[in-house]
Image 1 (cartoon, rainbow, N blue to C red):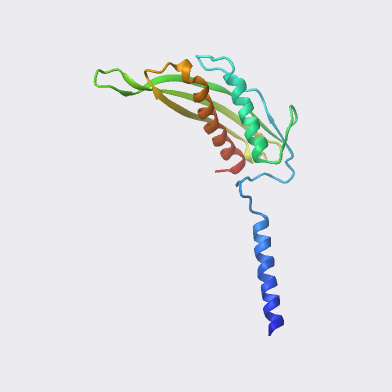
Image 2: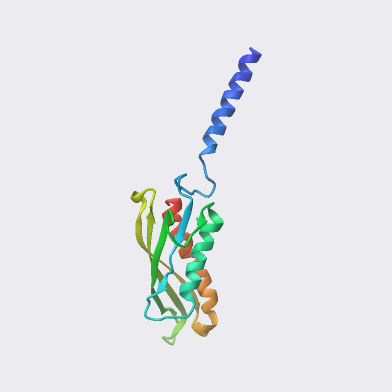
Length: 168
């Protein structure tokens, strides 16, 4: 009887270990054959061009993928490839005062992304991602630009990651 209990405990432990082996805490769904990724330069094609925004975005996307996967970055021939462009960058009033002037402005940016998976073309994707940053109208856009880009690009790159690798 005691031997039977040990066998049952061992079987249950093996089943639990086997079930946990396929789970990824980051939720990443990458083919085991996929070893490299490539992020092509995301050129700024929005009507308003701010120097460095394109390079900042490209670097943030590369860094996110490097930090959250075990894939290696390559400059060509990647198993998965990201490419696209910054297509929108505008400021609009978000809230108004009683004097009918803007109390708060919203900087919105959008990025068009094309994702290619050489190992599984069914996962290929083309999608537009956007996010915004609100700031007081009394503050100039130049004063908040770096912080705004950091917040906006952090959200957009995470959304891209989730859509392409985590499949959320």
